[in-house]
Image (spheres, rainbow, N blue to C red):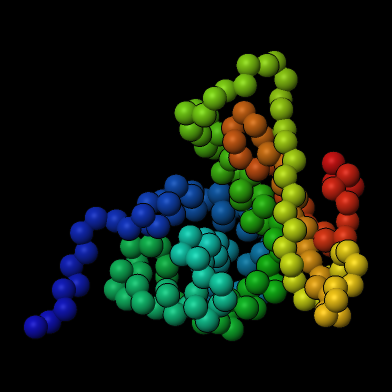
Length: 189
């Protein structure tokens, strides 16, 4: 019995990608000149590859690339032109500046801000209210500076601290910043 390749409907990931206007991504790519070293792997392809990695819970590039391969014939539904190799994805991560993706995010927030969910309790005040959230992520010592005292086993872990400034009216992050874990929260505030 042959395998059925008929595909009914669109996957949720494809519906998510359809919300991203390709023209906005291409205009930001031109502004930041993020496609000058990449012949085939465009900024849009890079963006949807990274989004797929985040939504599917991939933790490393080998897993990400193998999951995209598993899509098989359905890959065209998700706007992938081709399956990127690990080396292609690694080179793109190294060469493309993160600011192009930051500006794409801000463009999308500008487009979809009026349509964001209003089911949460709205704050009844006249001023904008922002909140700050910080999370410490433990990493190994040689890259990021350590925080705290030496533990009894003598192994110190470094860390990175991720800060987000949240817009309480919309319920979304408007700024993100990363630093050594030893840095105090008041420096970001």
